[in-house]
Length: 336
Image (cartoon, rainbow, N blue to C red; front, side, top):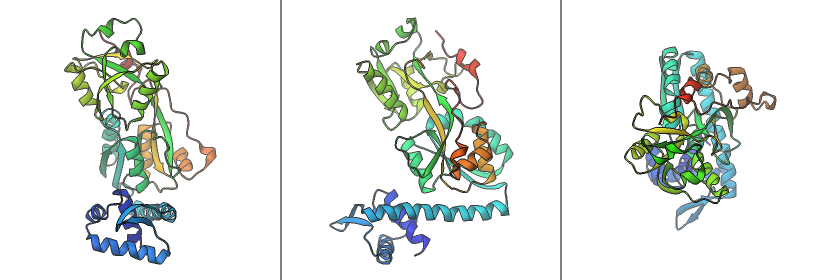
């Protein structure tokens, strides 16, 4: 069995069991892909997929085991290729980071700027998505690293390295009644239309849990995955917003006001996720340490290799500040 056969299997699953879309992604024809799938099942002697009227509807129990092994084999093959590239040219290559919009927009620019100066021959790609999408990208090998809140039920195929805690703020237009509150409460927030992140994001579920615990039903009028879009609708008067603390800059967001909400909602732990037992090139370790200085190469390498004695340190309490920014910025956050 060839690696290409396993790659076909993984692509079919990645594209929601659509042979047509998987064939397009692999730049081959649907009949050719179907033949390769049939070859895999003949060689294994088991059905990998459940079929209904010639359509794939699910993975069989054997298929799930085959898929997990196929993903590991493809990841190992990529690791072998990376070893060769690493020794051929340690300062050149590619790095794909899967992350959320908030991290890409607010946490990563300074890190990427320093990394680009240090490694001008490394081609860096950012792929944005929800925590679940980030997990899938890293698991499949489509991304080298994931940066975002740890996805619920994250697979044991990944190692999650805590970086920092991200707290929340409430954004309002100037002269909003909430700005006169002595101490912000959930009951006060529930009186106004709320804009926040999409359901796919961990922060949205934490927000819902906080209101439910007090028997409150927030009026969520708009959801989005892009914090800048959320801010634009707050400025236009659609509602107030609950967002990551790092998303507010008093100098840039002069049309908005920010209120600390860290006492109302549990923080999200922002993690770097890496495939377990993955081979990481030297510059990947440096990128990780630039983003999270408490994660040097020895700790990351041992954790990725499964050394339980090398448990990553707890995420520092960062109050919502992205890497490279300090508490002085937080003190300026609340403006009337």
